[in-house]
Amino acid sequence: MKLNFYTYKTDIGSLNITADNFYIRYLSIGKYKYSNHIYNETELINNAFLQINEYLAGIRKQFELNIFYEGSIFQKKIWNELLHIPYGQVISYKQLAEKVYAPKAYRAAGSACGLNPLPIIIPCHRVIHSNGSISGYAFGSKVKEYLLNLEKNSAV
Image 1: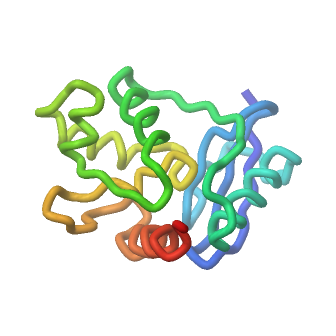
Image 2: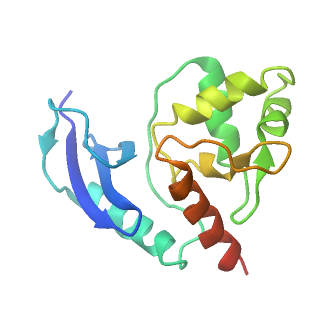
């Protein structure tokens, strides 16, 4: 399958968006790691960037994008649950695990968050430790803190 990607400059770094002809499939921040994809700005990719840019400006609270992601059954349950965390709110990894009926699987929930193929769109940055600490993020704790502060300051 042919995948297109395009890179945009943002306040949080280089934003890489990958899509097929119908769905946004991957989002990453920083260096793009797939060499077999075609560097091509499509209408679908540009629309995703415009919505993410609105989000980063504090204007957009929800995304209206066709997304597709692959993973294990557990990962998909976690990612689906992340989509239900309201803008500007956080939950703990333990609470996340409980929501998918696996209360002891909070570490696995954290791992699934770390493997999220569509960060920001699927808001894994809204998950923190039970003690309130921000913890890790696939693109660095500074980016996670930036996103949480953005939402906190524009959650009204």
